[in-house]
Length: 475
Ligand code: NAD
Image 1 (cartoon, rainbow, N blue to C red):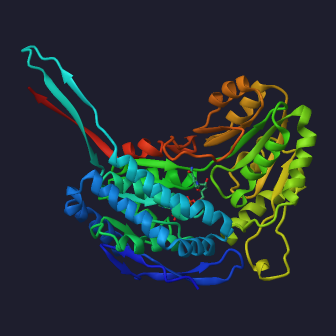
Image 2 (cartoon, helix red, strand yellow):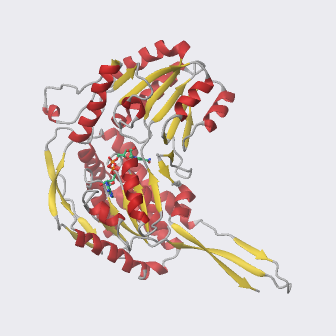
């Protein structure tokens, strides 16, 4: 059993609300319960965050805020194994992923924003005036206020802290709502924060679903000053409508239908191995995963065969996060099997053990589908990649850019000039050349078109979570 999942409001843990079951995706068994925050508790959390804005927290210097962020990182480090176990239990992801990516990156989020905020400078200008004495302009960065952080289930702690850390770094207060499917590490984070000197009410946590529950109540709340959301593009549209009522600023990291381009001049084995990683890491449940692969025609058959063999040989992958998500992915696969070719996978595996009660889907390679087929056009968010051939660089670019999404893309080529020509011409927020998911936390992160609004990462996050104000002093 997991440790109990609790809300954290105004510095106190709370279990109010009707509980719903927490399910182990590996076996489908119930492992615990999550209390769904009632509306009054969400209101209390926002009020606690609003009150804390004007308390001692408002006097903390960047250096003090930086120090407390490092102490939160220390606290996660001290309970590292608990965090890893909780993340694996909620998501079903292999320990290898949680222990090398999810939890270390959550720690790195706190440390990198701690360092950035401590070293941040602001601008100033001297302005000439008719009397010759001049004026001094300088910018002051103020917190936005109460920030609602709403996060998804695929990288629960990593994506929550990706927003919580910069929001706190800039002096905001936070009400966080993690995915209802994966609430446990957020609760552990609240326990870590409760052990630091962060004033009560600066960080609050409520659990529950989105529509008609805690998520919606937060985004509609008149006292929420900004919304930082990661999740589906459709949810982003809904939240934007809610935010419009109060003109609440939003930062959105949304869905994708990411493409890979493999040119015949690429290192063949590197491109195959890289694509296996980009398509099947966390069983395709990473927003950056490749779901469409375009391969130059002269190597198409050999590449398709190598990728299919690689997919069939994969072991140690995890399940889909829920029965509903598994059914959605299998729905795409049934339609793809009827309309195209399945080169590998295509169904739920059979284990003949407790995993048959879980939500598994085989790593799947498809081909032969038209570009407007749902499996090629829509985000699947599962272990599925579709391969199609191309003849020219121009055609390849058009295929990638025709998508309504624009999060990430990967180019595999051995031609340096082509790499520099093609990568910047892709309509995406993040392009990789001969690698995938290599991230420096200071670089801009985000998508274009239906994949997001705004950029996070490094100073981009610190800019979003603060309001620049100009002061002009006549000398
Ligand atoms: P989701 O949109 O269903 O849910 C995300 C969060 O929003 C959850 O906490 C949920 O409870 C909440 N929510 C749902 N409806 C809401 C509403 N009406 N009002 C307020 N909150 C609401 O997404 P998901 O299924 O949890 O996550 C998968 C999606 O997230 C995929 O589309 C994936 O591409 C995307 N994602 C994007 C990135 C990125 O950085 N661009 C990263 C990870 C995941």
